[in-house]
Length: 573
Image (cartoon, rainbow, N blue to C red; front, top):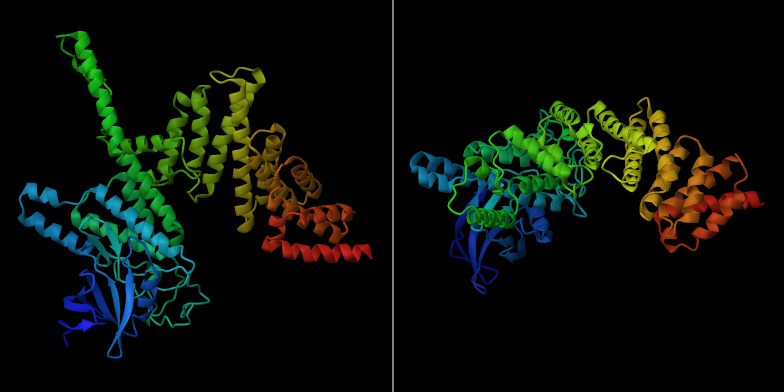
């Protein structure tokens, strides 16, 4: 029965039905107090959890609920009304427009790649908000029909009817969520749901599910939009969407935050700040005017005109443009630790060809500061790739740079660099190699692969070089001593580990909590195993730690405290 014309809760006047789904009708209502439009839907057994969730969510790109009202023993959810259209409607309308409209009208209604990337950033921010909540939420039904675009071209994620309130469904918890509610059937929309959302023969959830399922649907949504709109997606956007829609979750982006970061970098590279363009254009106008004044009535020849700084960067060849974009990212001073430039490469082989091209260039045959900076940055390009040789390739680039630096320092010919610059670069290369080999060793150790011990020993060697170099800030020195001490402890070299921890407690102005805890844990183990008499040292370090509130407040300290006190009491007796 139609509810049009009814007043719910005393002040929500139902205007007309604006939608109808599996869980009931949705009505447009007018709030008689504020005269604002609202969307109202009845809460049934199937969408009670959706109502509870929407009342908790507050994000600019997610539809939010205002309240629940009760009328005639029924519950209704009052939501914000988003005046606009879904991505599905926009895509289909543009297809129809392309068939009937003139070229001018059709072009004015076509969505650009720039708009797609902007919407992608907004949706990624919304998904990241859901995944990073104290109780993470997986939407499970991201698709064009569940994304609204308002009149200001802002994106809003809607319809949380099948969202789940748990961080991950593992093989142990398949069939229930954290609320104990049965997940008897696999839910999702065909063509957009991730492979792991599909059920077995009986339609039941049968594979682990986490937030990466939403990232798959994200990619499929924008692939659908680009196909319907016939948008020629650029190299970078294709790379990002391809990574989102990988079949295996481990090959997709591992978080919405990383996806959002990739889209933002792509946007900055392809569509730089217009203010900079205006400044460049202004500079061009000034230069041109000055040259005209100087040359009077002379005409500028074509070669001189083309050499002027127009501020534009046309790229006829898309692949070349992608490499240039990667170069800009690599040269950026604020480049993140795991460079975003990698997202412009289609696959691992293409990256290797690019790196080899740089290595054979004149740049890498020089002895300039730019060469060593470039090698450092190129090594970062391998970080996101999971191929077995990627880590070795990254380490090889660093070792090449370090070898050349050692040669310069040995013959005392620093090229364009000063002695201080060379010394700083040497320390930086040692630091990066220390981190690289330590990471390689830890990964092999976790995966029970051969070579873990060898990598750890190599890492310790570079760590000792850095330790003797005495370069870096107080924080970098503290981190080095902590990490180097752990490596020695893992490789069963307790004396070397103790040497690192002792140096830290003696030389650092602010001793890190991690160093104190590692120091105590190592001493406790040595005294317990009676390998040597470290009881006095353990007693002294323990008493020092008791005066460090930030250390004693750490949850890990309690376990070490109980063990240390018990051992000291036994040895004392």
